Amino acid sequence: MATNRLEWGSLMSTDRKHRAAGVSIEHLRKEFGEKTALDDVSLEIEPGTFLVLLGPSGSGKTTLLRCLAGIERPTSGSVAIRDQLVVGPNTFVPPEKRGLAMVFQDYALWPHLSVAKNVAFPLHKSSRTKTEAEAYVGDLLERVGIAPLADRFPNELSGGEQQRVALARALAADVGLILFDEPLSNLDADRREQLRIEIATLTREAGSTAVYITHDQSEAFALADRVGVLDRGRLVQLDTPEAIYRRPKNAFVARFTGIAGEFPVTALGECGPEHLEVALPFAPGQTVEALALDRPRPGVDSSLFVRASGVSLLAPSSPVGVYGEIRDVAFNGRGYEHVVEVGAATPLTKIYSPHRFERESNVRVCFDPSSCFVMDPMRGN
Picture (cartoon, rainbow, N blue to C red):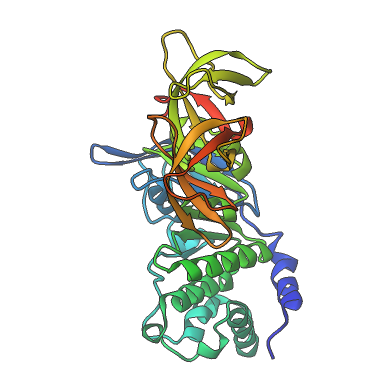
């Protein structure tokens, strides 16, 4: 009989939480010919942390994960896992001796082994008896929701089912450090959401440290304790999801983590210790307060970066806000997302309202100072 969730969590957490792996990466560099894939990357991962590496294609996140796994050999720099050097001058520990497990984008299951035997594979060096190992594998399969599929082979499974097998196998390895290589990218939206929750829950219940890469900012924010944003091989910002969303370090981080719009503005003066009053070129006489993440310098252009969560729509008769016109509207299940044109500027996108504003109708657009940032648009480019 499979254990219930409380019992299973207790089994997984009693000893493993004490074995979660800390990771230290210092001045890591990786070159492929004339291309620099990683450029002086340093970071510390505390034991038990769920770290998500976020960035566009070519940012270096996959290379960083592969260097940590031992699949790639860095050009220079060092990596330590559990205070043991695995990469450094005259040191390179192979992947199988680093004490980690990996969940690949393409699942990497043994095609000739059943589901149960795939999951049991990391246990061949375990001290468990055969009966104990079979019970343990059964518990894992129960938890990831594929116990009835134990005797099937990978080619008889859907993509989501194969990914669950890969997750169960990684947890079975009992290593305290799990690496995830964009594990949800090949799944449809419903399965992505369901498996994302399972990955977050099971990894934390196991007490494992996780390093997870993705290009999807909503996925990163939903999963992570800490997010590392990479751009062209450099680690641009490492912080909590909340800090990265509310205080992006530069224009690249702001854009990549999702903005509704970006407009050139003129700073008029301070209106508090952290905020500026700015004039909007498309709304003569109208001003907006915004968080000053950069202090504008004479002769340097500034832009207003607006998060979708910082925009609200009101009826055109409202005495506050700037005039806008609805260009598009879409129902998203909980309400409506709008595309709003304000003056001659680039339209604001994904503006939520519980109420539907029809296409070509007029509205008033209000900006929340805490979700609007004044920054140099070229910083981070």
